[in-house]
Amino acid sequence: MKKKPLITICLILVSCLVNAQVDVKSISNYIEKAREDWKVPGMAVAIVKDGKVVLSKGYGLKELGKKDKVDENTQFAIASNSKAFVASCISKLVEEGKLSWKDKVRDFLPYFTLYGNEYVSAEATVEDLLCHRVGLGTFSGDVIWYKSDKSPEEIIKRSAYVPEKYRFRDGYGYTNLMFIAAGEVIRVVTGKPWEEYVKENFLEPLQMNNTVISVGDLNNNAATPHKPTLENGTVPSVWASWDNSSAAGGIISSSSDMAKWMMMNLNSGEWKGRQYLDKEQQNLLWTPHNNFKLSEESKESLPGRHFAGYGLGWSLMDYHGNLAVSHGGGYDGMYSRVLMIPDIKLGIVILTNTMEGISTPIAYYIVNQYLKKDMRDWSAEYLKRSRSRNGHKDDVEERKAKRVLGTKPTIDAMLFTGTYNDPMFGDITVKRVEGVLRIEFADAPKLGATLSHWHYDTYEIKWDEDHAWFDFGTVSFELDNNLEVEAIEFDVPNGDIFFHELHPKRK
Image 1 (cartoon, rainbow, N blue to C red):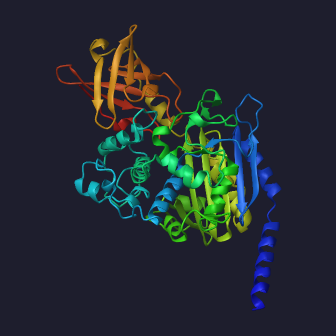
Image 2: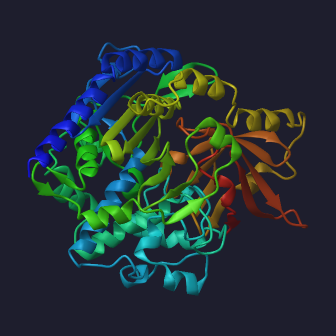
Image 3: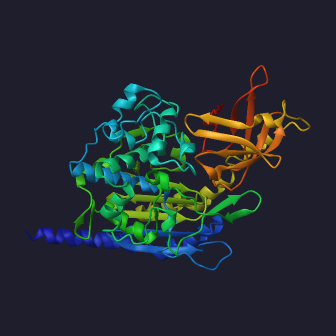
């Protein structure tokens, strides 16, 4: 009986010794230098260790050109880090016996359909929704909900037309659409919107007082999104509404609030005497449900990793012999990262107000300070790699180089006007306004644009508003053998919102 207290004391001393060897002030200085190197306007970082907050701090400005500084309560979009909240809500409902992981999605959403395959549509389970294995491609179909006025139910119904990428449960395709479906499952089971359920069961009892799920609820301490541009550098932009897709990425939070979320998760679902998640259910969330191959390049860039996969709402991998639980988030003008090492009860959240990939190297720099592994300049390495990539810039330049000057449309441009329909998206109208062609999207008015002749029957899309994920794009009018307008095709180079998946036919 006397040995147990001694062992406990030894463990506490070892823990204190490890923490004492980590210089949090030095980490904070590193974060600030990295922010300056990456030219990130503002960011907030929280580190939790052994159930305590060891750092929660703001860096830089909420908006370029203004004086307001970021602090630990400043609001940022966490985007896809919302997916873990959705999975936790489902987990709680399973624990309460209100549904099962193996329940068919159609038990709750009778209209649920995947790429016209009746077997897959009928067999897909609640569990399948949360681990990216239904057979859709990564980001495929996001054009359905992006800046759209469609309801979540209508988005899911339109998802029936998203093409199959691989066989059911036989690959990995990151899909926001299925988390929107999961949000609707929560609504059907509970009789209330998923946003209300997560507030009642997690946000409010965790005292996440700065966390909201709509841009309409932002307080006066919110960061401003920023977009890096080729012409003008990093520029402020506006908050985009993700209300209709909130289950895929609509939560807005702060570093202080996310610290509470991480401490609860790192403490087997318990925080301040309340059990939020059943231990067995949380273990299931952190069990790989969909593994995928690591490239040799990825292994070299992140030594200490041998496998990676996706659980339920969480990305999973091994890292120097430890389980690493993480997720990233990308919103219009903001990126975020959560990384936890449960073995040592370490959690890190990084929130930024621009679209620069600084959060991942900062997270791994901090982790390695605690693990005493790979103690290198992660930020500098990732920055060099990032600056060597052009994103979709090369694609845009290639298209511009192929423009044929001095051409004109095959037929009178007035004949291009009319309404076109794509079953996955809905109606798209081309009309002439004061002598200029315009294209308008019935369910997404914020995507409206004027059309400027590019070459032949192709027009450049001049968007009415700036968009975070894309800029340059063209639309081509397709004619039949009798020079009758049949359809339009889009070419908008970017890696996230796939306009090329739309094939609108003239009505």
